Image (tube, rainbow, N blue to C red):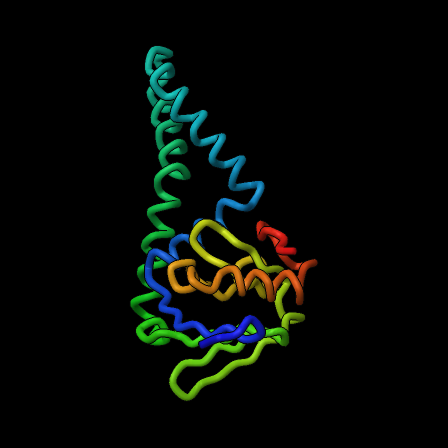
Length: 172
């Protein structure tokens, strides 16, 4: 039984968890929002461009529109699948221990301890808690693996690192 001071979880990172993380990182950037807006604009203009008589321009609009709207999510899905399949660490569950000093992650005979100071930010999404070291490097804690303990986890995070939390409700 875990206490509020130390929460122990078994975490299995699956392809969909990795995909959600990659999507989150990709579409959080301002430039990505601009690309999406631009590509959707190209797709909207495409049918009208067919009446303009410039086939090359019409094809260009279609290709540019399809590229970022459809190709990017598809390539991220393939990247997530490849990462999960090729990295042997994802074949077995990880053990996460969250306490007032930080995050401890172990698997088999390997154990790593991270202080709360090691993380640049901690973010909650619909699907996971993300413990970031940099903009695109983070530990993923899927919600499916921590649903029962989420209140206790958020309590520890709000107490220990309130300045690094993003998208996490303050618990009083």
